[in-house]
Image 1 (cartoon, rainbow, N blue to C red):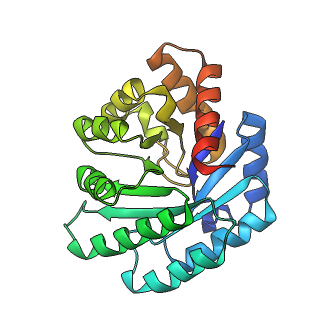
Image 2: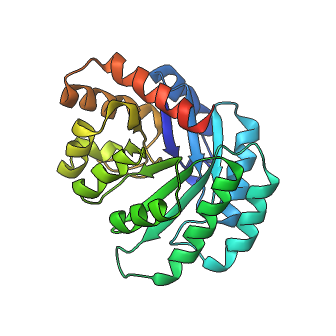
Length: 241
């Protein structure tokens, strides 16, 4: 398995990051795609990727971060050819619609296209809007992370070839369960979003991927090994790791 979305640079892992990765390996997680949310976070993301070969960095400016950090973040992306994607980027309209998020989102999509690497998209309460912008921008390498939007918009995104990573909340959320059951196999990825999105509360970590893997296998009426294989193949295809 590959955990396609984590934040292992978070301070919640500062005391036991190595042990967390060892537990992940024991659980069958061979690699993690580790994303950032702002400039300072991106620096930390890059730093830990140099210490652990199983961590693959994705850096970008999230829509809920300070937008005046955009230029510095873009420069950092350009200076680091070892990153495997741009993210997490997108729109977050959960509390209020912020039109100011659109231009930074578009600029980072354009940069990812120039660098020929994927975008990892945060689309909280703005799923269709994000998909519309991605289509308008002719983005081809896309991962919709922890998508909470409509099933209709998701189906359109599948037609465009966009990947979806299913978080641990699939254990309790009907919307995630429908996605996990119906998404085309070739577009399915797994994620924990560590340290968050643990339905049991407390800190999430990549080893927990086993829980969602088993649940999704049961939903799709296939073996857990099949979900292992699919999620790994798809992650490697998207991020070229």
